[in-house]
Length: 131
Image 1 (tube, one colour):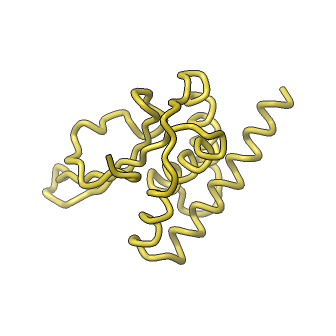
Image 2 (tube, one colour; image 1 turned 135 degrees about the vertical axis):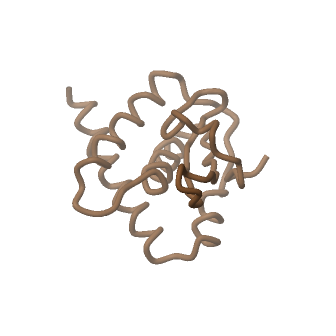
């Protein structure tokens, strides 16, 4: 129970930090931050699920905009804090009205972390860190 509360607290802090960084920095700077250090150790399914669940729970409740980009960056920061691999994927597609829509999702090695449901419909534009 305590561990879950600590994870929720960390998720709130990281979501606030990610939202703040996205609000004040250019995309290029956020991308550079997201492309930082690279780990080869992937998260376990349990680690990825716990982080995603915590970040998504706050994403639905905070009084500021916290959609896929903010949630993805927060999850990536949380994984990196643990020394785990975290690749933020940025893609785009056309919606049913023909408008361009973007989406962000995070994977750790072969493990889906957050935003991965339906990601296959988006054309991949970039991965941070690259490679």
